[in-house]
Length: 311
Image (cartoon, rainbow, N blue to C red; front, top):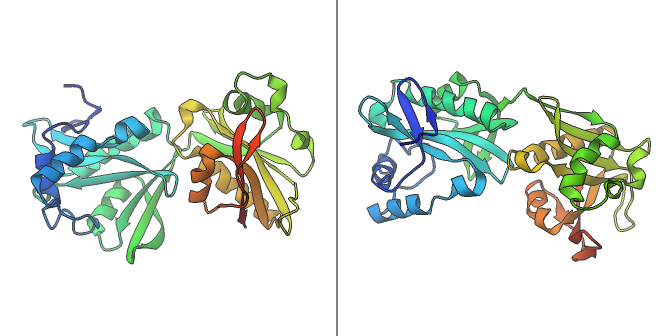
């Protein structure tokens, strides 16, 4: 059998047919789901249907993994990653049968998952979300290096958000021409290189952000002073946002956007707006941008919507 990850005492593998038995038992243990908000599976069939329909590996390239003990092939629980579209971040999660608690299995498997996420998958930021009363889970997050940064309320429940940066990434301001190595393959693929040039690229009021992984430029975004007649106040326009294909679904675009908003606020910008490709609208909505126009076509590029956010 091929494993996703191995440790001294454990191996982690994809879910497979038959794991529904364990998911039914695990989610029907009151202690195991006490702080999760999950409900027990109503029937064993429902648990097997969940495993059969679990498509995170194919959709996002990451997922939760079954944790198996080497010495006897015992199914201990699960540990792994999940791409959260609502916050555009990847979280680390874990759940084990209570009878295996206190043996360090959760920490051991989570450490392996963390290393895999940072160094193999090259994920720039990781989070873990724990119930405010779940001291055991918070301790595991701390053991693997995720530090509590905020307390939020979700569906009436207090949640502690833990966070870890991948220090192989850096976000910094760059020159206009530096953006072209990402803009061209992402936004103007198959067209002449000069098509990536924008008139406002060189203006003093324009700033460009680059996301670097080990000194390789993998994502860009440009922010230009540009006022739309239908909007009010001090405005800037986002243009040329792009992330190289092998670095997508890692949260890089969200980081560029959030950092860009911070820069804009320092310049007393009140409204950030842009023309969003149709395929990107859902991403911007998750970052609290609203649609301000009917759909329109940009020649050679495709359908767009004007979107904005009050900063």
